[in-house]
Length: 433
Image (cartoon, rainbow, N blue to C red; front, side, top):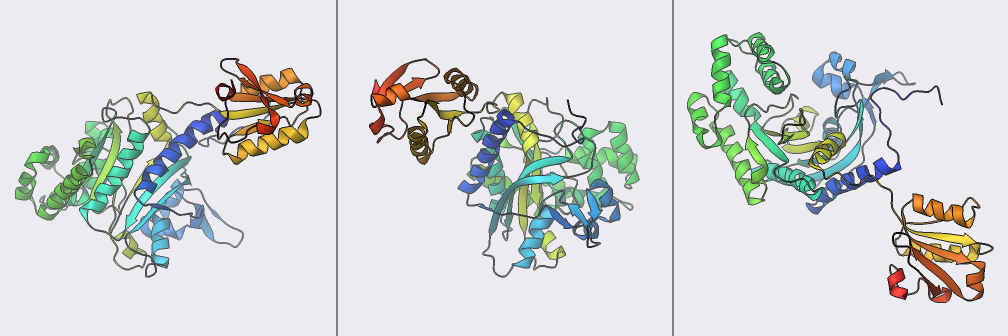
């Protein structure tokens, strides 16, 4: 046993676990690629100013920040949005609009470790820059929905709770007295995570009276078919129309069934400006959001660029895994091997040729690299879940043969070595029987 312990909040994945994670990540990315999103690579370390200029020095307490050897204050990236915003500003004139980017990579935050939340975590980010149309919001929703359904999750397993930050801001701004809208929205964002008493206390701290807290709750419970009642209360007509337009566009893309109006969904980050949404487990077994996203039209300009509308989603790998596991559709945690080329005696040259030709066809192929006996090689082939073993032995080669053995059934057949693998893309025992 080693005395070295893994750092709290950081995870490791052995091959079987990583095989399932890779399948899930590839599935999410493939959904984005089908919509024309292009992969970008981004730095793991940024200047700490990228975060402190927007959120203040206190944000450093939540980051892995440090002084590098050049005396610069830097931080491991806690999220992707500021980075891609900076990248857009750097080449804004040269980039064709709309800009559609996707990226899967790790991030780091120094925060309390809990279910589905770690200090190092992986996210797939999908972002659109340069379109203010509701169809852009709907496309992000569609990518997120298709990623989940491609993984096998159904509409009975998840829902997108959709809201609009300007509806919240407009309602709060219409209350009498001095209401701290930002603080109130942050309180609304925490509503599901704290007690009713704590929630009411936060709203009172933001400037609402007890009567206004109750009135706000009534307004936030307004159903989708009565949003005109909100317009009668406050100047939110434009925001309501935009929200309805996004939901209509989601209907045209076939994903409206996954969307539920939820005016209490706020998203805590200050840079959100329009429609926002969070994905939740429909059964309630997962007590936190799976992932979320929304519109952030002012961020590019705040980084020194031209006014550029933007919308995106950040899908966390760990929370998607929790949803899939709860729904019983998480990919099997199992490594797979197409062929194991087993060597007996002085057969390395022929075994090497067969292994190369099988790999050229795109198969996963292993062969002996440890000088094992016949029995030990066969045990190893079984341990790596080899589908087929190609036995290349001295006696068989003397007769111009090799043996194919199907590991599941135990069936085997001899085939001419000169015609193996031949013209077969995926040679099997059955083909040569």
